[in-house]
Length: 249
Image 1: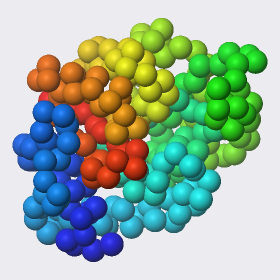
Image 2 (image 1 turned 180 degrees about the vertical axis):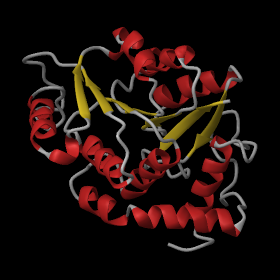
Image 3 (image 1 turned 60 degrees about the horizontal axis):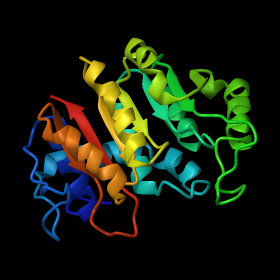
Image 4 (image 1 turned 30 degrees about the horizontal axis):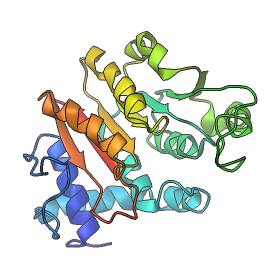
């Protein structure tokens, strides 16, 4: 990974947009309009590379066990947590892999902030994909047990419930990093994004599955209201799930 690498250039540009250093140039569909990544100054790229390399071993540790997030997405989450200090809110825990990852990042940064992870639990419910795709059943229960037994995860607060009904709690938490990886329906994402209306503090809200219209379009609607900066970390290859993000102006 070096200066000029397309991933480094595009990711550095996205963070500049989200931090208000650059103006976004994504098209109306939220996609980068060129086959070439944005031009970004070398110091910004070097800063990003340094932050990415800091999390190399942690990402390597979890990249082999996650089928949903690729290593680049994990690096973006780590850097986001580093740049936006404060409590973390994850909606959609499933097996807790991202929770483990972000907990280790917070621990390495020597922060005391808690990590709140939310999952809907219905006893006996199973996904049409079967046990491997099912949530939030045994996988979530196993994750909660791990949260309670591993010291690095002592900061994790596992919440069972419908995120749509927990907005008052989220307002009290005032999360600096919000990761949406739960209900990927248009209605589910839109309902989760409603929480942002109650926040008046700095935060970054990242959503997984950027190539899904039902995820992308609700994020674009929030962008179009003009109160948030928007960036699409997705590089345009439709086989990738990608991440998109909003930050408060």
